[in-house]
Length: 133
Figure 1 (cartoon, rainbow, N blue to C red):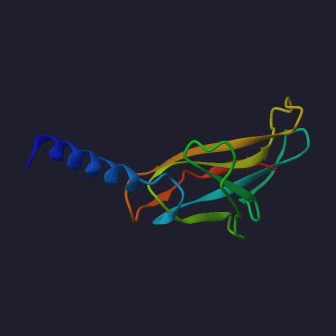
Figure 2 (cartoon, rainbow, N blue to C red; figure 1 turned 180 degrees about the vertical axis):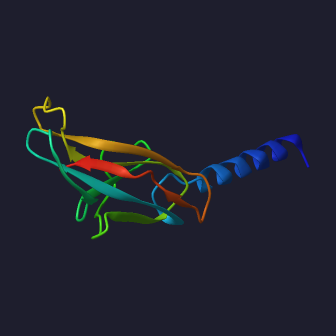
Figure 3 (cartoon, rainbow, N blue to C red; figure 1 turned 60 degrees about the horizontal axis):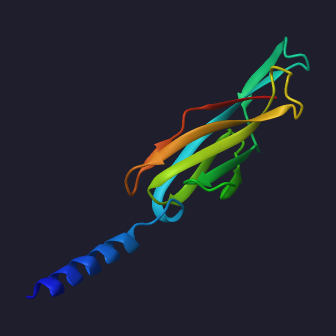
């Protein structure tokens, strides 16, 4: 085989391998799941009224380095959420919480968790997310 043919074949194989790598997102067989717990305080955040599973909270998932969320689901009655059928890669999950410092003009902030899926068929449990109500 000529040297130029080997170089071309090597380049072709490189392009095929490069095109097979997929970015984070739907299309895989991995799962990210976790639980949200609500800490319910009075308006001044001086008295804790209760701690309970945060049902029906919006949970947002960002694929890789995207700027906006890629998926949004709601937690179930037990505060559990689950994103299925994901490929390997980096993800960011966030949930909104009341501002317990009472210093933000918006009165809310995002509780953010970064997650990495390393392998196919991987199930990643996210550390419990605590929010204020």
